[in-house]
Amino acid sequence: MDNNNMNFDPMTGQPVNQAQQTYGQQPVYQQPVVNETVSLGEWMLTYLLMLIPIVNIVMLFVWAFGNSKESKKNWARATLIWYVIAIVIGIALGGMLGAALGSAMYY
Image (cartoon, rainbow, N blue to C red; front, top):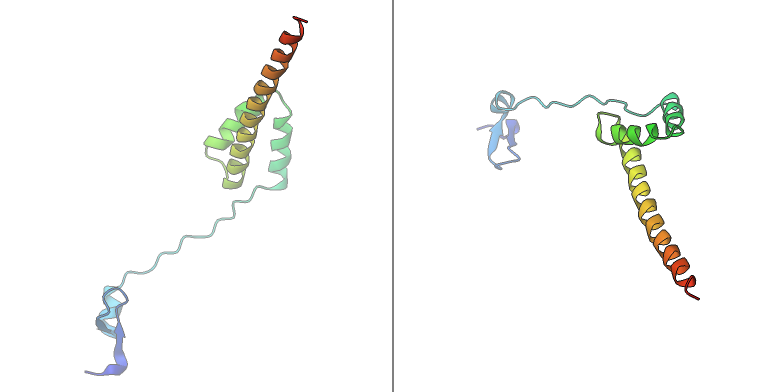
């Protein structure tokens, strides 16, 4: 057996000659690289829509959970998380303010 034509299968470590190697391997499929960056115009429209009340919240949910580009999807999800954090802090501060005002009325 000629050792010059011998290669080893990386999975099994068994020797494989060139004839077996070319017939036994599947071609490697590489996914095409898709440029999914959000353009400047898309960001301008995004921020314009964020200025409109009610529409901004609806569009955040559409972008966060719909079929949008990955960077805009992550941005929308992060914005929704910040909204939830702000609402929780607002409720807590409102409760503390209400309790302070309520207790001040009895003096």
